[in-house]
Length: 378
Image (cartoon, rainbow, N blue to C red; front, side, top):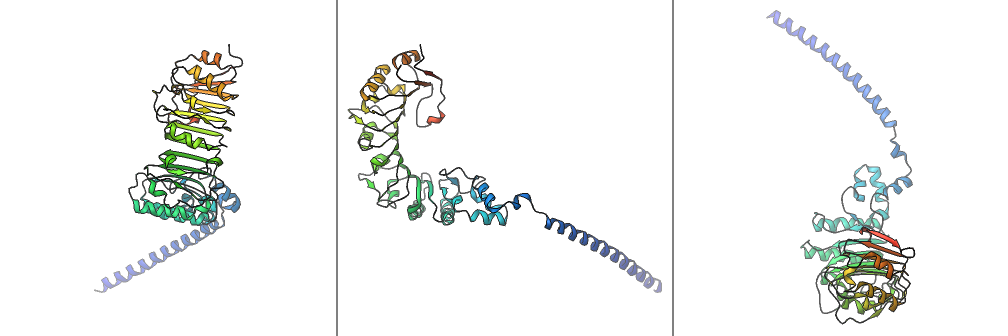
């Protein structure tokens, strides 16, 4: 009995000694930890020592250049900057222009959530001019779509660039409303009604892209426009509009089918004309419908020059009295390039490309097959 008690006392003493040793080790580790943490607290990451003005300028290079719009989430979205640290979040939220270009289109996020985030962005943008894209096609949520359009309409005094893909009745929220800063309107209307809508005052509108039923659905201050793209239209739908575009400088038409008995339209200030075909089997002479005395640049698919491309071109130039500086002929070639060069000696630059000018290819994406200076061509 006594021996067992003695053994327990000895064991307790040994444990106390071991605990004391461990406590001393822990104290030493805690002291070292405090010293290391103190050094870390004194360290400043170089990026965090930059002035707020420099960080703000760097942040402005994260989203696409304005007026291109940012997705509401992702690595190139301003939202990503708010997830790094508290200091960066505060800086990002203090820059109104970082939140002024918004792409609301479907990226897999429910429309209701996109609308909520959009509302946050609009509040952060304060009174900055806005660029907004909203493609309602494919969301199948008419109630929320109406809420989004109401949200966009509530900020119309600040809208500078607006791109919409909507049904006709989706335009109700902006019908008759003025947009004093609107410079560019891109509108794709997917349904057609018997009536047209108009907007209030659009004093700064200079550029428009109208697709599908949009040219038949709306009225714009056509005489103000200097740039106009009409997409997926018939030529006879374009003429009444072009007759009113007295200050138009750039015009691009993406046409459905050959013109019928289309009236001739004079566009007095037009400098660049682009004619694209949505199919490639046309044989009608589209250029017969235009008189463009100020034209400097013509881009056209050969399929739109009719059965006699050379005669179509030379008659057009003669009728318009234009001093063309550049002609770009795209698509299949029924006429040798040398024949073009011979007939168009007055045109300094001729370009040829194999690609057709359809609605899927932008002018910048065209691969030039060859070019020539007609003044030196033999």
